[in-house]
Picture (cartoon, rainbow, N blue to C red):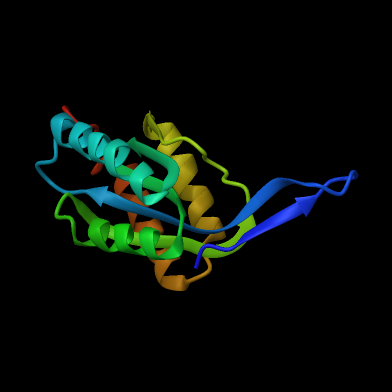
Length: 158
């Protein structure tokens, strides 16, 4: 269901359209053997396929961890998440949050950012603090332990 709500401005016209958007935030650990070329293929595939599905978002990759915010039609986002969860390039896939609401897109353009260990640690800490389910906090805590122990390495340095 792709509902649209038109917000009225002071003149009474419907100049701002808000769509019912589903968003999902997850993180995963890169599987052993995934190299820079494989990550580049993931990015190319996302840039090619996600716009066709009405999916936008933000993908952060660093220290062997993917962290992604997806937004778009509920069915399309959940189908993409099922593909990601089944993708052998991803391990320990953890859904951090999901919701559906009428709003403008937070990330109207697909973006990919490579971050260093300090940045991915901050992202994981924030996600752990905001995770609503104990199993998600546990999984995020395990990723943080592995990161702190040096078990999650940068691509190309494995």
